[in-house]
Image (cartoon, rainbow, N blue to C red; front, side, top):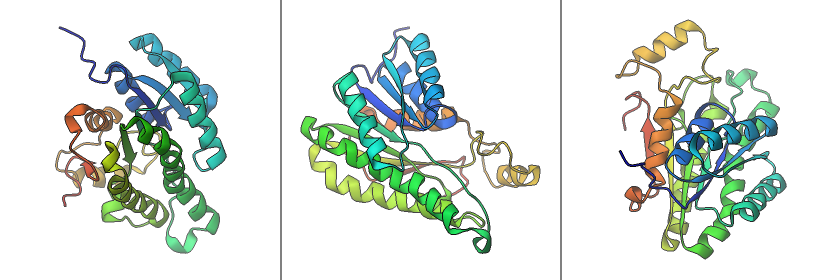
Length: 252
């Protein structure tokens, strides 16, 4: 069987790539032929991930420190990727955090950091890659949002607001950049087995599975496959869309 490499010759940047969904996305894009830059606040782990992906796929990879909430850190990260690989074709904004609580118990710092990482972080990364993508008249941007950005969720007003904002950013940027052959889409995971969900109380896990028609949590690879499609030429006429990958939990 011939190797399936629809992304051969492409360069992809993935944030929050050291583990979980980000790692799965970076791995799949490399498997499909892309050179990959793994960005994360955990610089050492990002490099370990990059090395492991390179060893498994034979693609060029790099692991870089980036704090997506800091615009200067992001610009340095993107400049490093451009100097190393010469271009950026694909950006996946995956980095995200939670600080869950009822609104009466959420302090201002927990509101600010979730919005700074999840929403401002994507804005910073998009702003940094737009100019080189526009010059080359090609780009694929995928923002990892969440089904709670569509449906809301008690105890997650900060997280849900950040992810809903990310959907608005996606649609607006798609309108801005479409004429330059740059697509901007979002993937909205449901409950996925990652470090963010493994510590949920058992009763919440069971309720979540019960609310999911397919009857299970998703895997990081489930999300990666959706991203792999949206950054491929097969999705060249798709932009401004939100693809829910949630086992049917939220149907709109």
